[in-house]
Amino acid sequence: MSKRRILRVAVTALVVFAVLLASACEKKDGDSAAPAPTEVRIGIVAPITGDAATFGISTRNGAQLYFDQVNAAGGINGMTIRTFVEDDKGDPAEGANAWSKLIDQDKVVTIVGTVMSKVSLAGAPISQNKGIPMISPTSTNPAVTLVGDYVFRACFIDPFQGLVAAKYATQTMNVRRAAVLYDAGNDYTKGLAEVFRDEFIKMGGEIVAFESYATGTSDFNAQLVKINAVAPDVLFLPNYYNDVGLIAKQARAMGISAQFLGGDGWDSPDLFTIGGTAIEGGIFSNHFTAESTLPAAQAFVRDYEARYGQKPDALAALAYEAAMIVVDSIRRAGSIDPTAIRDAMATTNMETITGRITFDASRNPIKGAVLLEVRNGAAVYKATVNP
Image (cartoon, rainbow, N blue to C red; front, side):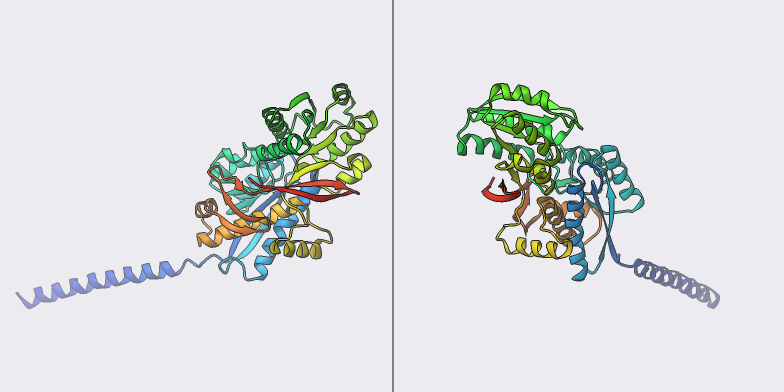
């Protein structure tokens, strides 16, 4: 081989080596150029204004309290939580807008929300289609999580509440005649009414009246006249506190003496203000009681009261619990990738302020319920019903 050829081969080898070395350095520099995320963007959706504002404010406060506590303790895997709060006003269209804004503009990786089932049903398809996990603290309509595998909830569902009320009426009160009065324009109230009706009949009871009214109604006398005529032992009111208070006053004024029963929609201090003495003795199922003896629950009640100046209701507790589940899922996922968060959330198995919580195949929590009785203008713990 000539000297010229040897030189040419050597130069070629040096060029190839230089190209390979530059490529390796470039890859290494590219890998190190992507910094680890420093924040986790989480959305909170609730009816901060509107007819269900008391629920929305409690929900926002409960979730924000826990996220702030996590940040104070160092965040999630070194990342700071940044929350984005949207007011759905209790309206499905507003809820859909809130979901789209949080996902498309604010770039959240998960959403805690919302309160009302009809609004969650508007937001859930957006979460599902865009692959952003959501967990509703309080939407109890079974249809919510059936939207898809990115949709979770922290509360038990209407069938369980309906079962609890029907079981209490037939087995504890030992009554057989029940009437139902519900808001036909609300998925939550309609679903709970139907479940109670079906379970009560299965347990040997008779539904002597099944009456409905339009959303926004304030005069219930037409329905109550029909109910009064059949003299039920129980009047099941699966409605929100504002309607329940008015119905109770009008029913008692008409002479209806039936035992009032209801669901978690009763849970508001405004129930006692609106219903006054008429709602005394009413019994409703709920997700949480501030009288809980669980250490985690006692700490939550203490911290909530110190920050907001009042004891937490079940809405605040469920939002706090939903926030706990979100943080735990992100920690276990070791990532802010929404799909990884979804996968981790599905395998939740943790102690919360209501006890241990896991999810069934439909992403509904497996947990118990409490029964509360209205006494002297307050909701007092009566019993616990487990699955």
